[in-house]
Image 1 (cartoon, helix red, strand yellow):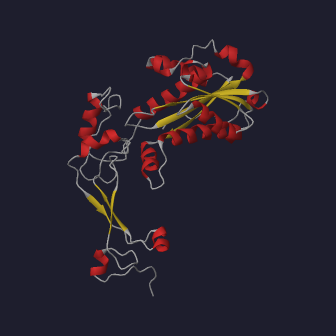
Image 2 (tube, one colour):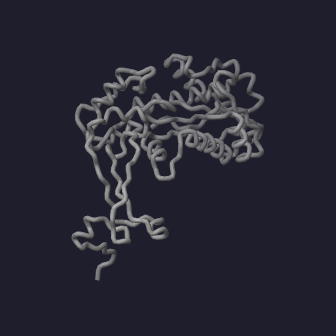
Image 3 (spheres, rainbow, N blue to C red):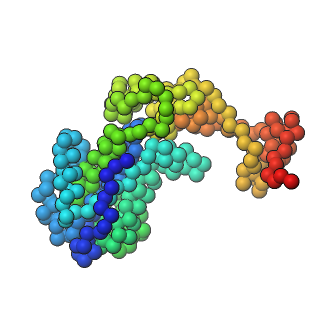
Length: 305
């Protein structure tokens, strides 16, 4: 999906104390992956890093970001890594029974990058991160997870620390490339990537994004996998969606312990658009059997003679 970082660890990174910056791209849009990027260098290289004109990726034009990314890729004094979280995984985590919110997903991705770099043998001494949520709580969380590292968590860290600015460029260019090279899993005709900015909401709404969502919705199957279907901005596009009822013949694990009947789940749009799931208890024999199977005296067979 995107450029991969070098597989080998730079020799200097295993001998000198290093500092690293972490930032993300694509947290808010309804389309495409969220990408976390990191960039690291020897602590002794920090002053030189400040002269390389890295800046918050949002303040740079696309051509400038591309040029800076190419320059850091060939710079032997810099290392970098990315974590690309696809739209389907984002929504699945946010909608599953034990939900994982976007802040937690972000924290886990950042901590995953720290762990990855440490496992590569990099002597991490300091890590600078653009905050997600409360900076102080986030810093405590990171310090408890990695007690041997100094963490600095700050708002707008990408404009304060060059190493975070570099990470911002890594994340943004990787996400942009992932979108440019996106290959649809779906085979419907007339699909295209004229998506606009990815923000169809009330504030800063992009008419191109709204039109793309309108053109690519399906009344039963929802949206293509490019879309984060858990985002609330998807909901208005499915006012007339086909209501789908999921029935399961399996008994919930907790149902056998609590005696509760199996639930029938109605998803107004298959869960593709961020609708909250509606559940209703079904009368059953006490074994969690739904009416359809009871009326026809059907049994679940797991083994055949």
